[in-house]
Image (tube, rainbow, N blue to C red; front, side):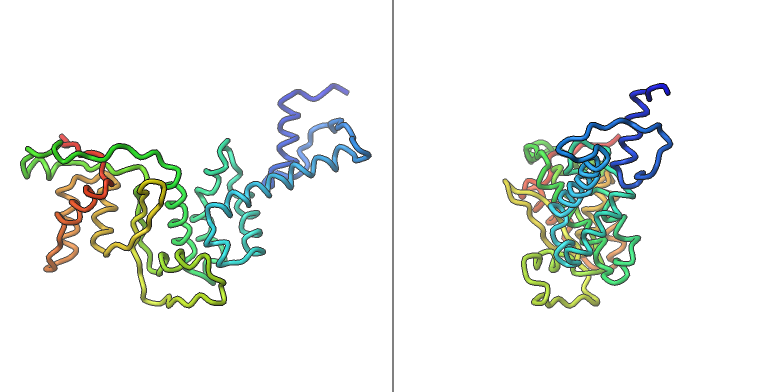
Length: 265
């Protein structure tokens, strides 16, 4: 019998390790060296179990609050189902959990705890903010001579650590209670929407509440909408309510969250 090619061996090994493909691949049997009186097939299981363990550890590091809320056993099951659906193709384990918010949203667990997908989005933003490489903040002299028309066409660029999430649930309160015993957590969930901005200052990641209209403006600017049209859309949604749009923008500049503004053509 001819020896399998390197590609066949690689595919066979993948079929034995990755959870989404751990079935017979039809590849001819590969001779594995026994060591320490353990057959090769038995030793290979260590790598398969190790893969799931590493994925669970990586997810637990990012989604600390999710793990705390659902419990260890449920989180293990969540991690295994996630690893089956989203096998890692990255060398960096810190990226392995980027699809978890979408995955959680499709699980029965989200029916029992409907805030979980938004809470996962918040925790992912926190992790990304921690690892982001921030840049020097904007100097106000850059745009000192701009006209109102130029400001209206300006596109705002934020620090890489800046993100926001809007939720129908009090996700910031839940996140802040992540170190309390679950039995001691008392958070009213109904009719308590929260909008949160995430950013880093120095080595500390900060999460702060925004108003509904603040978050609407920030999310539009983060998506690249020109400042003028973003402000108009938020003001229109607010109706007759006067909004301190200029104050919000100035505060983001003072906090160093904006790195530059560019006039769009």
